[in-house]
Length: 304
Image (cartoon, rainbow, N blue to C red; front, side, top):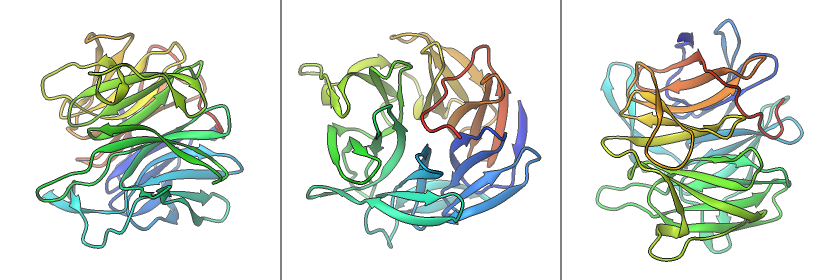
């Protein structure tokens, strides 16, 4: 493992760019940043609230899941962990940043009559749309149930495709786009749904929670955050508390463990000339790190 940079506050949502740089969100700093190959960090845009997940969109844009803001708890000098819904919170949103100018615009903040609560992460499909998780917000004595949405990237349509989840977080699509994976943080489970058409999933029958098919549930203290998929279809999951990225090569509890020296491994992406480098955001001792893996990652839509 090598450290690309430690000049971050609470990084998430890494995106590998073909020039070798990494674009990511810095949640506590309310910003979208670019990390150059020499570790230099530059701010692309200020994104008020809580920029939580990011993905390249069409026409030189980055789409951001904005959780609307949270309080921060200082556990050590300069080290933070997320707290409860902030006092200034109004709603969550999907925001779009135009990379050449840094201009930020809001694309969605509700689905019909339902306001977005705490959008967390997203993945684009091959049909002009994207799926995103809404984790909801936590308060002193209650928390929201979460949802998964599908939306068109031009802002013309948004639909709820899964409801009633407990803390949906990381999200990814299989290489053929026919399976959607969603990680739940607090339950330590990864669910999957067959994709029948853009924005339409096949659901499992009751008593399956939220109609999902169970993909992985390792047990213990595992809490999941971001997901990424390899070209072979393996699912890689950032595992909070486990100080690792877990690699699943099929349904069940078996996995390979890629250990990392941080209890808050928040997200990951694949990159490098052969797509065999895994870039991971570590958010307790805030860093962007990189390590080599045994197989290439899956190139994402709108890779730039």
